[in-house]
Image 1: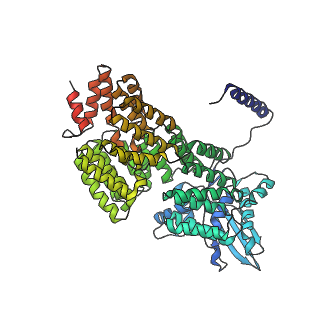
Image 2: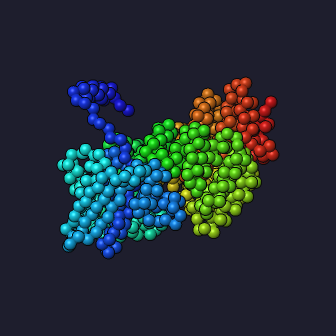
Image 3: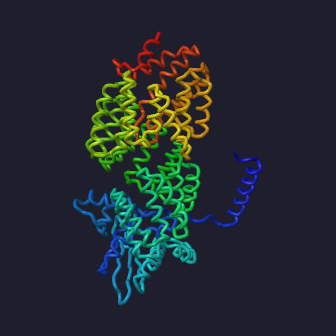
Length: 626
């Protein structure tokens, strides 16, 4: 909390700033320049330069705060879409990609032999008109001097683009150039290409090779860390993030902010991530990674409005970039703005019908509007995208079935999806489906089958199902198994799993009618992390204890934050089927308050359900209507 003295200091500082600003003209804010870097043409006959110079040049040119370099991995994916059979990002193909993606400038470069050294050239081209904006060239006396000369070339190109940074500052920036080893830079470039191609294991090996060639290569350590984090290997991810921090002196300022921010996101320290990425976008307003990462961090803090604002800022820089439309759509879902979610999802799918994330956002929007058949059709289309799409579609269809309390339909979909996942050796998604299958079996009154499914989920991939498996073990009466998983959650350092551990403990207390203890545990969980599921369970506990006013407050929040119910585990598993029960418990709560609208809530709940459903909540709501 900020004390009064601190507020006073801030106020004085603000006044002082105003006085200073009045004494001189405000600095000019340069319009954002989006750049796509084409493949450097290599005529030296030495393969060490193939794919080596682009990433280093991109980092160097981004030292200009108004410049944002487009993701070359994404560009390589798009080039084949805009020109059949194309794979290379030469100047002509880069212009095609730039035109589609709304990128203003293409920079093409070349490296050639000259006497005993090398000559490096580049030019900036208006992507739409093809007109050359400017060009520059430098020479390197030998191979070892090429990277430093590349930094000088990038500085000249910054001038062409309108950078007014003092030359002394540019020289200082060049001193922290990514790596002094051309071989390490080459390995890093190979690793980045493999990373964007989805070849994770090969990318890790290439990053490690870069580190072996240059043990001070901070960005390579950060690359390995990010790859391990994506694979769920938290131990190795944490180790390499810390090693990256030891070598921040060999990173550009943007890399430092990105690396530290990435580490904080990995460690689920959303507040520290927000601090890093806020500083990044303050100093580099054109940094779309900063804006998109900031959006994610705000979302982790359940500030969906600000998450959506930051997602829009990234989209404004790249208005045709499919993942940014997908991000806006997803954060709109979390914010409960389903109309925006549907609009942005459809734009993303028009640009790329294979973009899986958008199908989920569209499906959620359709479910929220009561268009259940349209949502089913959306998920069926997702199933046709690829193997992963088929797996995700099964999750979506099962979520839709459970939303309507069609337990048997959910079991059928999940059984098939599990077999497909196992055939693909995808233990993680199979385990998540087993946990959802247990939920469907519990809904159908088959507790022993549910326990068997949960046991299989935990055996396959315990880390992937700690919270949902523990939750359904409680419902199945398996307190010991639930408590064991809760203990695993409680040993983690991150706030969300610690909150989950207390929620499971509270669910056990609630099942044994220990209402006061359950309320205390859930209140502690909310202080750690304010989750939708925590508020929902707290409402249940208040109702069980007869504290109806408190229950009404929590349920009102659940209604306002219904978008967050779409993914309560923050684990890309659709959970929108949790939301309808909010209306059931509002009915219970208002019945306790003797409010006349209790029946209206029961009717709303039942309107979302299949008339033949045998879900215990459906049966009880029907019985309570009068």
